[in-house]
Image 1 (cartoon, rainbow, N blue to C red):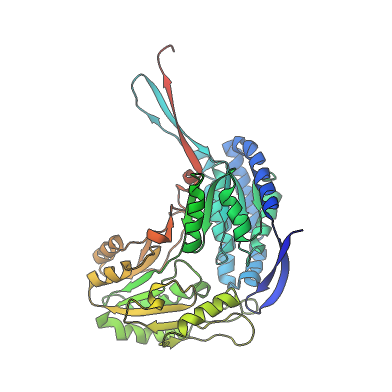
Image 2: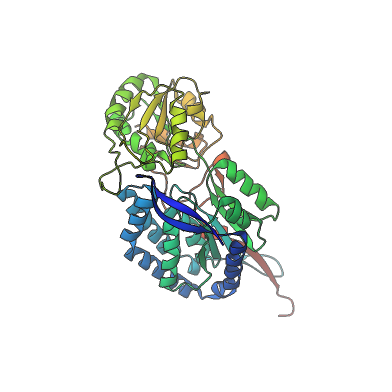
Length: 456
């Protein structure tokens, strides 16, 4: 008999439901079904596979409100975020529905014959999804993988399995064959580990902590198995003195406190040119205090909800206990896993709160003297996922963006992710890229075929 996990509403700490957790044997059975379904799915005509993905997108679109409501309760997301996340699943499916008919190979000039390349699906793809953005990150894996002709087994995080389970039902409703997209709730060290070790799983997509990502990568190496990793971040928001300081300060809280700071792309370090440092902090304080922190289920205007669990709340509080908080916002009292938005002024780049990924509503602020020091401080980290640069000198904006070692940079903006542009990190923030026009290719093998002209 399977174990079960009690799913909680993080805003209230109250139980929602119990979800069965798959055993190794149940994971093996799901993988076997996906492998059995692969031969037929890869043979579906490109236009027909595209139509099925568009139908899946349409069914998701009809259930956006339902999916959002589930995520508000299960993950503590705000209504605005949850609706965007459900819509992102729909948009990814629609975008990658254009891929099956565009998985082009090439004809390469060679002597004595004709040389052709083909992109062929890998087989079964294992997608391991974190708890911070359960819906979008699931779709970033399964949409391009399915479009390329693979079947998918997906393990949601134990804390947030409910939208993934519903999406699997909607896939069947849309007409995807049994076994093409299978959701397997379970523990990471059981189901996730089995995705890594099972020989029929030919690629693993993992989003989560850098520490676990290293273990996934090492495990995949045993079978020379493909792996995409989207891991931690400690991204910088660099504000130069010539920037529109009011705009930079007004947007900074939402670059780090969105989803209660539980975002690998969070700009959790703010670097401010020293001549503008005091003015920026004076503008940042009212912006932080204006962030509406409230239980999302009962307040549709909430801009920030709770942390996902008591454990995560206590971890974040542990960082704050080590420092003096410079600016603090508000948070509800009572039950639930709440931490107020917090700003910490830092002058030592060796401090733990400056170097480690807090993964909560906490941002550290430090002054810099000039462009060279800004780049040096931004790059002084094991991570390299995202970042922002605020300046009215667009030459400097581009120059600094090229110098900062991160995969996703924005100038005069805090945008990080669009489904039609590539996403991924430098250094220990990850391996490979998700999203964008090339994502389906990462779920294929490239085959080269030479046809000799002799004898034709």
